[in-house]
Image (cartoon, rainbow, N blue to C red; front, side, top):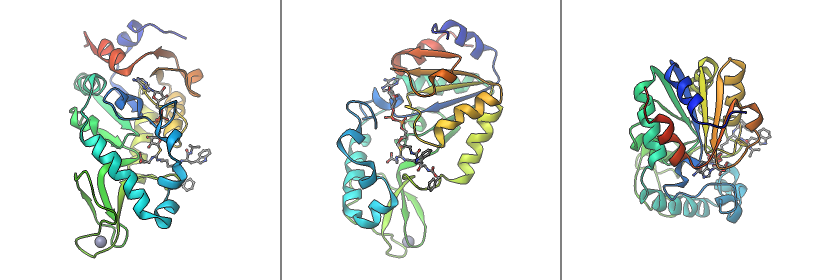
Length: 243
Ligand code: BV8
Ligand code: ZN
């Protein structure tokens, strides 16, 4: 397993089709808590009580309290050098796709254009009665926000555990993974499906895989290169000097 940055930079220099798959670690240096790990959200809160459709049916006010808290937090944060480096990388690769599990919208804020938000976006809300979706950046949506069209209860526009991903977005992600030459897997614990299996899709399509993370993950063995460290330090160094 190769651990130096230079061979990966050289490979990127010669690549036409690159996919980057990101997770919460990319936003950690912006001050947004990750989900797993010592200080992860799921250490303090139970995913099944807050991020499942059953939880929302049982106690929508509790679920909204959790999302309002995260909205207020994320609303005060901005992109970090990892997001910026990925936006720069897109400018020098002819076919570039950024697949993110993050719901914070920071890749778009940093200027990334082709972004597939696999798990939705925390600023999106959807009516549980008429299905209407809107963007709403209020930090506090209240305890029981309702649809302005039909009065139905609104829910966060994110994908919860046990829910299917948007098939159109997932299809694009799978196609990009299948046909890429290089996949960078950055700041994800690689345990949530189907996102984690996109690395297998890329590998079986012949791509070179590289992981950037503070630590090894269940997918590390699949990688051609593993760069251990902070995304906000490694990615700017990687992109520096390209093309
Ligand atoms: C689905 C909501 C079909 C949004 C989230 C058994 C086998 C296979 C699958 C399953 C299974 N049991 C259950 C499932 C399905 C389940 C799943 O995968 N569960 C796992 C946990 C076992 N998946 C689903 O339910 C998905 N849907 O499969 O549909 C279906 C339909 C019906 C019934 C069954 C199946 C839907 C998944 C969506 C879940 N939504 N959250 C929100 O409010 O945010 S998940 C949550 O985890 C977040 O969305 C997040 O995006 C996602 C992934 O987490 P990561 O981003 O990887 O973050 P994590 O904290 O884990 O890791 C951070 C990493 O960063 C660490 O590795 C750390 O070392 C690193 N790091 C930290 N700092 C830095 C860093 N790296 C670099 N630099 C740093 N500075
Ligand atoms: Zn409605």
